[in-house]
Figure (cartoon, rainbow, N blue to C red):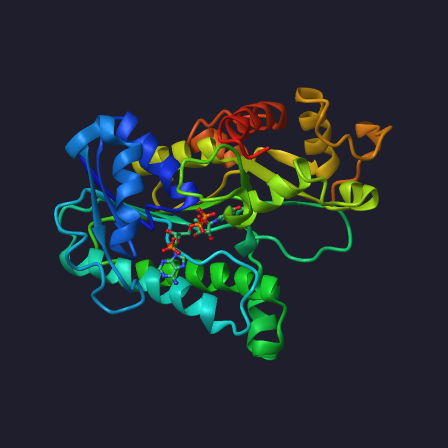
Length: 336
Ligand code: NDP
């Protein structure tokens, strides 16, 4: 079979492409400009013609993917802006929502062979402020960020703008499927990862130019960018990028993933958990808040990942595995 992967040059997308190629699928990747083709082709040169890369310059345009979807059996839509520098919600919401609707519309009109569409959403579309510690599930929706954008517009926090862009895009996708039930021969699976960390396959000139999640990881583990207080107080959930790549391939294959929203999350963390793992691997890296007793760590937000284990059968990498593999790679690249 052949799979279309949008935003194929992104951090997560390269691991999606790799999982698909390893499983024997042919891949057609889309990128925004010619200059982004070479690194992809070079990374996967051993697969030869099994990987094709095409340019779709503006994903928000109607019909943008009309040619791209022709002849593919499935689609993984990953392209969407992830940064926290927006000054207006439209910078994120327009490409997120219109890009999603545009690929679904093209799949409807021209994707005669398409059987499954997988969309990379986020726990940003799931989690919302909670006074008490809480375990979030696929039943939860982050309406708070969407409301914040509707009421505050450009005055909203850029992080809220990003979260809302993921919520609006995912909502739009489910609505499209519902409204076109009788007309589509494919079904939709949505993946909701929290922060994604781990080894890097995409093109990065310098570690300070890493994508939004990994630049933080790099600064905190290698550069000691967080204060001792922040290392303990900033807690979240994470998943290894290799597990995210595999999850996309599995979500395309498993019949039971059809019509499902699936949280793919490994575990909770605070930054000290990562710093401790890094320091253990290489004592020349920052030690952080010593002595640290993990038993006293406070984690406010957790995700129930049982659905991912039941439907996809995922086995998640641990913080220690992710840290060692990523730092070994960073060392090889001369990034620290
Ligand atoms: P990257 O920034 O590495 O990749 C983003 C991809 O989307 C790139 O191919 C990029 O193209 C493309 N893209 C960005 N903005 C636009 C736009 N306006 N029009 C068309 N294409 C665009 O980030 P990630 O790999 O981290 O993100 C991939 C997906 O995963 C996104 O949907 C993101 O929301 C989601 N996600 C990421 C998490 C993380 O922690 N990294 C966590 C949860 C979800 P270009 O290179 O040309 O800009």
